[in-house]
Amino acid sequence: MTTKKRAPLVQAAPARKGAKKVVPAKKVAPAKKVAPAKKVAPKVAPAKKVVPAKKVVPKAAPAKKVVPAKKVAPTIPPAPKRPTVGPYAKEPKFLDEQRALLLEERIVCQGQAEDLRAEADSLAEEREPGDVQFDAEGGEGGTAAVDRERDLALSAQALAAVEEIDDALERITRKTYGTCERCYQSIPKARLRALAFARLCVACKSGGLSRR
Image (spheres, rainbow, N blue to C red):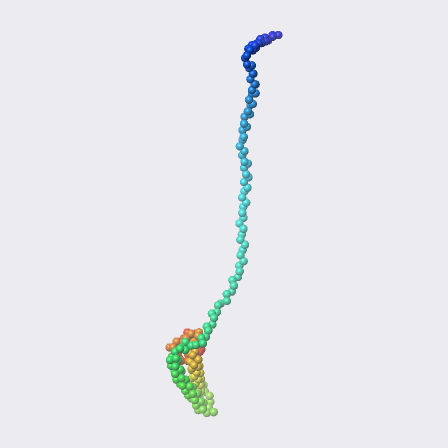
C-alpha cells in the first residue's frame, strides 16, 4: 500500500511583546441562497357561458269587443215659439189700411154669399114637384140642378171667406196680424195686400197646406 505524505505543520511565530493581539475575524455566514421568484402565471378568468337568448313569441293582442253602434235618434228641431206680438204691431198706418181693405172685402163676400144662396133657392122653387130629375146631360131639369149645386158651393166659399176676414180683423185688434201660423215668420206686405186675410206665408202655402 502506498502511504500519503502529510504536509508539515507550520508553527506559528511567537507573538511579539507589546503587539496587539489580532482578533480573528468572525466567520461570516455564507449568504443564503435566494430562491428564484416563482413565475406567476396570469390567471385567466374562465369564459362565461353565453346563454342563448330566449325566443320572444309576440303575444297576440286580444280581440277588441265590437260594441254595436248606438242608434242615434233623429234630432227633431224644436218647434218655433209663436210670438205674442205681430211683426206690424208698431205700424198703425199699415194696420189701418189692412182693416179698411178687409171691411171692403167682407161686404163683397157677404153680398156674394147672399146672392148665390138666393139664386139657388129660386132654382129650387122653379122646379115643379112632378118634374122628372135629369142628369147634367139630360134636359132642363138636370141643368137647373147642376146650377143650383154650383150656386150653393160658391155661396159656401163666400161665407168661408167672410169668416177668414173676421179672424183677420180680430188679429189686427190683438196686434198679431201678419204672422204666419205655421213657421211664425212675418208674412210679406205684398202678400197681405193681395190677400188681406192670408194666414200663411208663401213658403208654407206652397207646402201643400189647405189654409190660405
